[in-house]
Length: 457
Length: 72
Image (cartoon, rainbow over all chains, first blue to last red; front, side):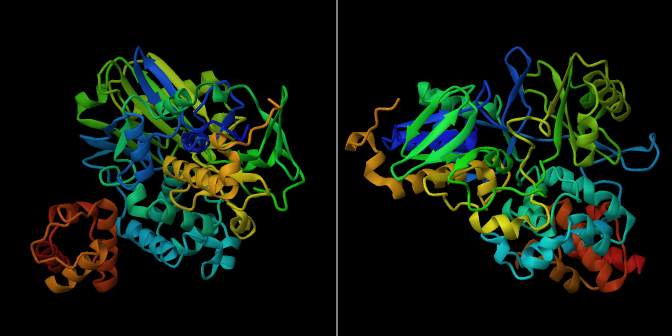
């Protein structure tokens, strides 16, 4: 066998499909009993799926758009009509209804916040953030410290953690200023990353984002093996031996396509010259909640389902009802510090709190007929979502080796892509990049039609 | 603040030189996030703090300049 790919998420499967298409013999090892990684579908009514993980795309996500075309998948727009609900005051009952999505906060204060973020991201070298001017200073401080220094208006201080939670599933204490600035630039800038229409949340994938990996895996057939957590990767002059819980595979090269802290959990011999994560690297803090109702009742009250809330558990909600109208689905985002708190609750209490909050936000809601909470923070084989959060010091330490192979071990995953880091687009671009890297590095020796093949498996 | 000064802010925020006195910010590709940056620039330039609804009511440089004049 030629190449072993570790991880059947979007990055690993994209890489494997690319390699297979070029005649490379490839095996994908996946720890879970499913493919998809941080994309995952939940069937909320017969034939109606919602995204428990990654969901959105926009027109700049060109690799994803191309992959969807290859896999015969279509987009569905995230159009929002109706008024929004906001609970941004201190009191539980301080709910307000407003036309559009703009919160009842000082527009000037929020403008100053976006001005400050724009200034921060402008000077950044997005392809190599650790080489940016002021990188060392920006990498030392947390986004929370930055906010204390730069945001004076109480409305900006209230909104900033909600904004960061929504944009990157981060608590401001968890990320360095450099990582925040990098993430916002990498995703296309604050405006693009924030926007539904004309931005990164313009569309969803009709039928669910999980179909990307399912269809890629179907194309790879028996080359994808589930329930095979990789424990160790040994190397010698001729190749790699990838050790799983049940056996081992010999290959010319390996692609590790898992988040940084999981990549570090593999035992490498010889060892890595530098780790893939540090003690300051935090999991993306997101729990995604789906409340399923017999119908999207909020629409009858002129509401879009969009809400933004200063108090949890649901810091924002959005109408994710399937287009066939079979049920009404309210998706709630629990992010940042709130995600850790919520994830620690028993599921019954999670349900009660989420249901009660939704009822306060949207009058006339019946009891939900379904409840799903997807806790990505404590998911063993993801360790966070949307993506790993680089804490103070991480970019300067980890950045220079982000994509540098460890001899015959190569790296993929959305966290290795400086373009659209943390998004499906970044994952796909990393898969394409690593497949090209493998072909360039090993050339004819791995293409089965040109000869070399081993007999170990 | 006159129409020309507001137009300049539109041009900078929208990164689009084709702004005239009656260009509608939202038709020109602006959204609510970019609108806040127009409002912060106006507050810096002349001290008038408009809210988002003011802007939504008067989304052209001409209308916005009038609104600023009425509040200054």
